[in-house]
Length: 86
Image (cartoon, rainbow, N blue to C red; front, top):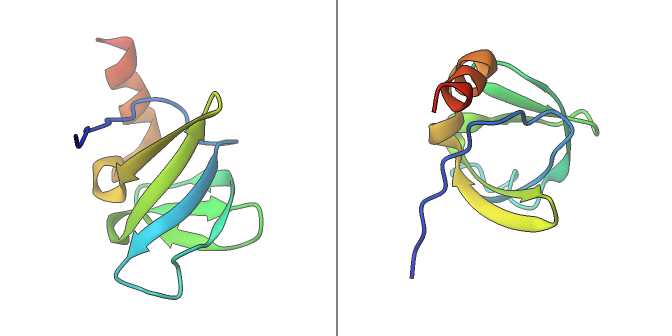
């Protein structure tokens, strides 16, 4: 069974791993998110991930979720506001 996971929370400090990407050099890149912009995630190891081009495994509360980075494109504060309004 395939599940869709929509993430509306804060990503900074979260551990992520790229499990799919059009750029094969990014697959397997992992680390903690230090910064997030409209289109990018910057990891603690200096790597930058374009959200739109990545499938991510996100670890939240010791649970792993697979998220299509396209769903994360946008201003982080707008995503968090959506969560508060639900």
